[in-house]
Image (cartoon, rainbow, N blue to C red; front, side):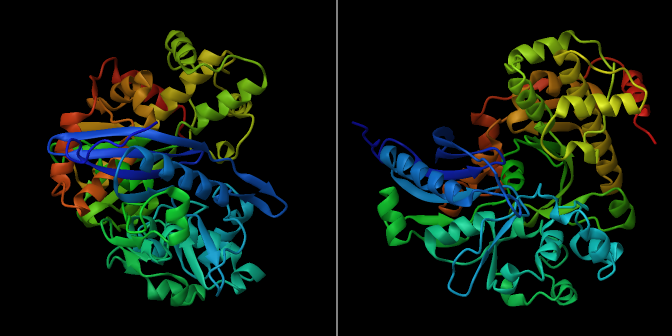
Amino acid sequence: MTTRPSSHTYPSAYAAVDLGATSGRVMLGRVGRGHLDLTEVQRFDNTPLHLADGLHWNITALFQGTLDGLRAAGAVADIASIGIDTWAVDYGLLDADGTLIGPPYHYRDSRTDPVAQSLAKIVGEHELYRITGLQHLPFNTIFQIAAHQKTAAFDNAHKLLLIPDLLTHWLTGTLGTEETNASTTGLFDASTATWSPHLLQQLGIHHSLLPPLRRPGDNAGTLLPHVAAATGLPESTRLTAVASHDTASAVAAVPAKDDRFAYISCGTWSLAGLELDTPVLTDASRQANFTNERGVDGTIRYLRNIMGMWLLEECRRTWHDQGLPTHLPGLLTAAERAEPFASVINPDDPSFLAPGHMPHRIRDFCRQRGQRIPTSQGAVVRCILESLALAHRTVLTEAAALARRTITRIHLVGGGSRNALLCQLTADATGVPVTAGPAEATAIGNVLVQARAAGAVSDLAHTRTLVAGTQALREYTPRGRQADWDAAASRLRP
């Protein structure tokens, strides 16, 4: 029989629902004076649905996984509150009765491909960036909506809820949009931190479609009776709006000591950038395709998306189907032994966005550009990791120049921080020391925003000090010659 720890002997417990592109989990975090620990209580798959009209998220399966995880968390602790973070940009539509109109589309669905050019005729690229400060990505919410308009589903839509807000609605019955995720939509004004009336009018979207904004730490309601029954938690259990964009939660958990740091939140995507006080909305920033997204306490996450460990995971999936080895430590050992700089790719080339046959596409990229073709698994992995390190260098160098910021340390957090070879290559490529960890930065940031709302920690500096003092971190010092990286980068220039 499982027993709950006494509330007199353990710090307060918070449930973090953390949904990623390939899996979801519920984590139990305990926070007290000088104390922060995290335990995974439930993990479940996040497998997209290929339906007749495109690629969708199996949102009901994710909700059931969330309920099961909350039940598991409640079985071992008294839960002070719950927070939900997910990926950005995707949404569900509710009709006037509050019923979901079909499963939400997946951001990798191809329906948005032709939309950007047509939308530019309505809202010019310069104007769009001046208002939103967003990196141009074909799957941004604004493009998804443009592709969705003039359909029966959209005609019947009464409310649009981003994924974490949809799950919050199903748990509590409340309606709201948390601002770190709202800032990724292309409908949010980066300067005023509100929905943009001008863009809504230009696109023919009624303001009532978008719920009111919430900030990290706001109360998002308590559990509905049937949710309490399904989870075994009291109806009074509070749901706290956290930094619901997973990258915003991860950046909140960066163990930085001053403001001269850069971060790389490395998972399916690598999100590389700086934390600023104000957005950078210059035309130079637009041309460099940097994004200005909200963080905790109104900070700006000035960053660019890079295709991250998706490349390696897709290779492993292909190799598994082919009966080849996929054990990550073995692949990394083979990569360390492979010849350095034999071939490099642009991780953000459009050919790498869709799933399937990634090793073949990497070889095609190298063949078309006259580079050596990586044939062994180790060579492919080495190619991916050196290419990601080069991309990290390029993005952070440009970000520092555009924001007029000096970088003295890089914090690499998320699952990629466990990849020692990637961390060392990033230090080598950038010439800047790298601190790796925490690997569970997203869930930690989720928990700490909840704890702060409950008064267990004070400000952002306090949360970062707590992370630095309680989590396992590794340091990587640059080595090798910058000239070798310069030569590799030159192969990718047009």
